[in-house]
Length: 149
Image (cartoon, rainbow, N blue to C red):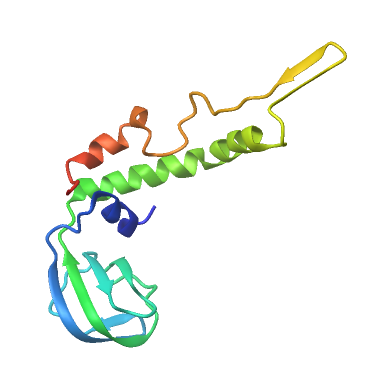
């Protein structure tokens, strides 16, 4: 899960200061911008290679010149912590979810019977939480305070 995906999930980019114009990224550095604190979240819009949400000062931006917008987002620390918790849960559970899903999906038949023998395979994952959105995990409830209609 990325910061962009979580912001899109709750339709909230945290009252961004929006700067429009022509921007250049050289050596992973975005210019021109007013003073942006190191580690602040920015959203780039209108770029060919870099549309998305990034932490300012982090590497990973492709060199280009584009006309678009850069949003300085005011992301609260609790929202960042929620993103970290979701990613940790997904990392810890991804293998179990994939295995359980494969068992349910394997083969074209859900049951078979022959010569007095009957076999019924699972047709659902039962109590396995397959997504961070599962209400039993509490992530969705924590996200609700930042949801916008």
